[in-house]
Length: 357
Image (cartoon, rainbow, N blue to C red):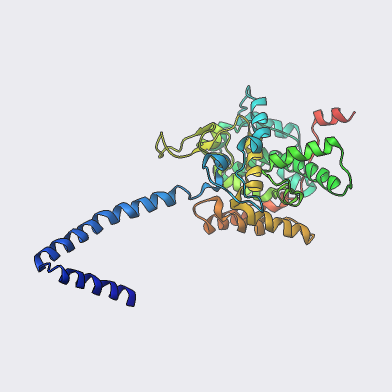
């Protein structure tokens, strides 16, 4: 305050020395006032635009390089390469382009023929390997909320378990490599592939250990339910987008209220499995979920189960609603008893059994 008063005195003295009359001073003051009120809205508007451009970009799987921003993840400060991160997802996406959308009645019959019931899963913890590629359009027509929810869980549950199985096998191999004094060329090649896949430029095994881990089944189910309205959303129906991930350049669907030429799109997939894999890769690499991964690693170190209700607290950056989003996820998990599926096991498919013979 003292500094400001001194500067004002100096200005007044300057005017006195130059013998400037009151009329010119009033004129100059008026110009300054007009300039301030004219420029202030522009400055505020610019600031708001700048803020809106970085809000809620944690869903943006492809935002690492497209945003041209550095996302420091763990101790890795370099810009991540989206092609390395998502190569296996793109490959999975391209494998099944001629998919057939089964109707709801056909899927229900398939579940009955294979004795796939959620009641049995909750008791026996075994899930039939029924892998569907697309959601049925009729799911939104199921009037009973309870039946619609159960139907959605039956479709998505095997997909989540399959991705967790893949990560579990990779993690087992990683620990085998870590515990060896010397590694083979094949193991080193595999490690290099995984460092790229998980966006680790520093080739740090401790960081890979933190990122290469499962997402609790109940948490993934809750997020899929929330993001798709239990399978009824346009993004889920038209783009197999189970988790509402964003893209600025890839295949995607524009939100109806957004500008056609600007902003993000919701990432589109050919098959549901690719959406689940992209979701898990997002949580395991994006800087917005660094605390999520840290909390998960701490649970591992303490020998505790991966508690979805605890880990959900670290997903406040997933949506613009922040803490309210976390509360909704926790409510979905508790009200639908989704933790019953956390220790469920996916039975091997006929193809997997044949490969063992």
